[in-house]
Every structure is written in structure tokens, then in C-alpha cells.
Length: 572
Image (cartoon, one colour):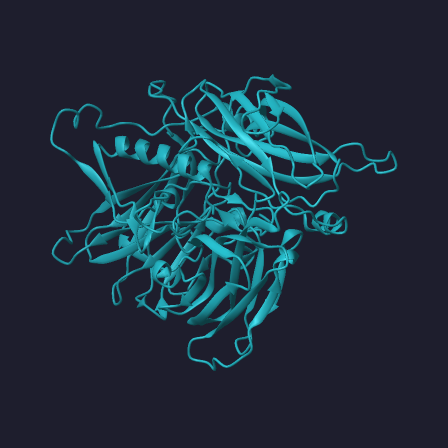
């Protein structure tokens, strides 16, 4: 249910429920800049009768060249509180802090990007005073001033003197539509009730304006709704807007859900056919039960793909695929790979001897899969008679269409003492493809050696029997448990992760921020990565996990003991 009134209000309007059957995710969305400019033309009212206003501001700066920064940012009047850095460097916490009413910046290392979020409480006519410059450059440039009132409706962008860099100030995403979740976290039990409070803030609308808030709970990254509701409010004479209470019962199915909130203006003239959205945002939550799902889907045993790299024509079957135009000229590689007569009846491939920057020999093979998001197993033959260090990587674009520097990287190592007589072994790598066309990259990781490998094949779920995307939700595969029961009650056999990168290690899908176009971590990313991590622990016979949640100056979750940064949680 959605109602209106203050925090003590018991007013209620109406809501509706619907069933739901499958999970996904999304992230905060900022207010449309064009609409914000229209709002600004209406004039602004302070919060309450006092001259002081309060808002949450994000300040970001950077340029093409990496630099160390030195300076201060402060207000001509008012105060700054609750600073949170948003840079990703390991020394971020020691480079930006709040002291004496100023934000002090003293970068400990070079960086191309930096920034912070901070709460501002100041008169409407206050000004930002920015004194920020490269640490090794001249420090006598005049300060840059930005009126605080500009940030109510739009962002401010200025050039920093003597640096070639830009500084951008704006309200943080969601500041116009604040949500009090009334609890310390957003992890719920199936069927749990949730009461929250939505407060429209500094909208700049004329008094008497009628507003409508609509809410819809969806499976993350989908349009399938589990709950809908609606409530109304208005702008008071002093410019404030009455808050709205929302109550709903969460679904019983586990997964990640998005609560979409949208505030629109009511009572517009009929000639304005377009819906006038004032503010919108998404609140993401997770539903997790205490009981494990014991239903075991079939394992990925179907042969999806098989390649003999020693066959000179293996690549011709892909020459007409539009997503790999480079294969029209032949295989992808550094040019040093050669065929090797390993046995009278067996021909293998040998990478070139380059194994150190700037010369690393490599070869790449396209992998075609039927059902992205499901577990697949790569099987690769390799020779055991000679020392080698063979890197094995799965490459795919992220949600922003770019290759990430962190992904699934593994490999095969045969030391000189372990090299045996002529023979073949098989390496198996589990991966969860995000697309239908991942790329397998093989690299030489040891200079002077020539890794030798043979056939490769991919095992996965059977091809879908119904059209996509319904098949993706209905036909699910699971990794087998070859060591089931061995570790139970025995000694601890734990996996160790020195950094919290398990979402990338298990191909968890990132979300795409619609405003910036960046690929970011959301609850769906972490939930998907955690589920796959546990499944992989069972697959490898482990009964424990040692996971570093604090590394490189940042924690994977908010904590009062460590100043968190977006290094491992880019959803901020």
C-alpha cells in the first residue's frame, strides 16, 4: 500500500499484487536533465521557512593524464558533513577527508579520476569555493566558485586551472526522491512485510502542485511485476512536499528485485500529452530463504562445440559470422603458433616462444554457446612431456560493451621436474558465459617454452527446446557434485580468495547505468556470483571458504570501521 503524510501518518491509498517467477537487477537512475531544466524555470522554494537547505552532492574531477591532486573545497556559508570518497585507488581513504569545515584533497598517488559524496547544509545563496590543482603544478591560481543554487536543478561543470582537467558537481542520484528503508539492510526473508517512507526533496515545484507516486516491484533486469501501488501528495506553500508511506509484502521466491519509484505531476493541461516525470529512482533488494533448494537440474553434459586447432580449416565454419569479422582472414593470433607432429598419428599446436612483455605469443578461438548464463565446462588437451605455462582466459564484453581487465583467467603449468614421457592430459575449466560468443584466449606465460595443446571442446546444457528468452529461465543446468559426501564431517578443505573478485571469476553479469553508460555492480551481480561460487565449491569438493572482504583499502560492504570506496562495489 502507498499512503501520504508525515512520518507519523497512517493514511493509506491502494496497491495491487501479482505473481512472479524469475530474478534480475538494476540501479539508481538520475533525473532527466532536460526535465530538470524545465523544473528550474519554475523557481525554487527553500525547505521549510528557514533559509538553510540540505542536499547531497557528488563532486568528481579528472582528465586524460594521471595526476596527484592538492587543494580544498569549502562553502562560503554553511557546513559539510558525511563525506564518502568515490575514487577507486587503494589509497583513496587517505587522500580525501573532511577537516575544519573543508574537504581536503592530498592525493598519495597519481590518478585520472577522483571524487566524493558529501551532505551540504547551507543557505540557498551559498557558494562552493574550489582550490584544486595538480600537486606538482603552480598553486597560485584563483579559486573557482560555483553557486550552490545551480545544483538544485542541474549539474555544474568547470575547468580546473593549470591542469586541463574538468570538475563536475551535481546532486547524487536519488536525492530528489529520498527513501527511508527503516532497517539496516535490504536482505529480506521470503514473504516478509516491508514498510518504507518516500520523501520528495527540493523539487522546485510551485505550491499547490499535485503529484502522484507510482511504485512497482519487479524481478531485477526484467519488466515482470510482482507488486504495484500508487499514492498522491502535493507541494505545500513553503515548498516542502508531504512524504508518502509504502507498505508491501515481498515475494516468496528467492532472488533480486527492483522497486521502481516514479513521481509525476498531476493536473497538467490536456495539450501536454507527455507524462511529466519529476523524479524517479530504483531501490534494489534481495530475498533469501534459510532452506537450500535441493532440486538438482541436469549437469552440463551436452557437447556444445568441438575444435581441432591442428586442422587448418577449423576456422572456416565461422568466417561468415558477423561478430567475428577478423576470422575472414584466418585464425586470431600473434602469428607464432605452429603445427607440431607430436606422435605419428597426432598433431598438436605449439604457441610461439614469446612469454614476456612486450612479446607474448597467443592464439584465440571463438566459442559458440546456446544458453548464456548457464554453467559450461571447457575441456582442453595438453602435452605433458615438456615444461610449459599455458594461460587460459575467457573474454567477453561487459554490460557497457567493453572488455574488463578483471575476468576469468586460469592456466596449466608443467614444471621441468614434473614433465613426463610423451603423453596427454586434459584441463577442465568451468565458466558461465554472458553472451553466445565468448572468446577463448591461450597465451604463453613462460618465455623460451612452447606450450603444446590439442583438441578443445565445450560441454553445456542441451539447446533450448522453446524460443529464447523463455528457455533461459526454464532450462537450467547445474554443476555435478563428484565429491558429494567426501568432505562432510571430515577435515576442512576451504577455497581461499585474497580479494573479493568472485563475481568476475564466475561470470556474474553487471548492470549498465543508463545515465553514464558504465557497467556497474548491483545486487544481482553479487547474488549471481555468490550462488555460482557456492555451486563451484561443491563441484570441487570443498566444504569451506576463506574470503577477504577488505583489500586494497576498500571493503566489499559498508562498514563503520573502514571507509568504503567503489573499488569492489561500483554500484555507488
